[in-house]
Image (cartoon, rainbow, N blue to C red; front, side, top):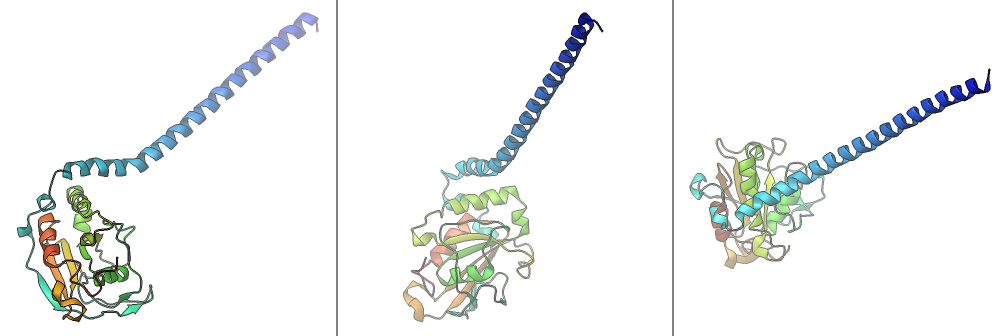
Length: 245
């Protein structure tokens, strides 16, 4: 083989190698670009709901709580029932039985949920045993069923209502909105998708010595007007242990 042939052959080999290197480089850039795109999609998906919630809440900034959601006329009459279970604390995980769906009183866990969080979904809600302890400490709990959970409009109303009770220092904002599921107990009465409950001692002036009752009100949809009236009639001080957060 002549020197010229060897030179031409080497030139062909070098050309092939150069093309292969370029192909590999482009492939590497494509993989990096695809990875970045996937990462951006994941980040965007994670950020979308909080941003949407924030944007939706802006519409409630200028609204009073009683103007959010359904009118109070969409709720039934307030009812009461003699309460039991005061100071009846058990360890978390202990099986509990509640007569009512949802409960307003009863034996409960020896832990409770802090005042910081106001609205929960099914995946992060505290156990019912904790929430009943919150009731003993003066919280009003708004329980919502799967119908509300499946409605963007009603969940937006709940977010707006919860935003009006956002204080973590004002005890008058002892409020939580939490889901009630089929795993928790019986469904609400027919046509009712929201229930508000409170553990009362018969009025603020009655103190711990008053006759304890559970307070219930059912509604067909979230109602800021009904909640505001309910919490005014049964404030945090009207409870067995009102001063505990």
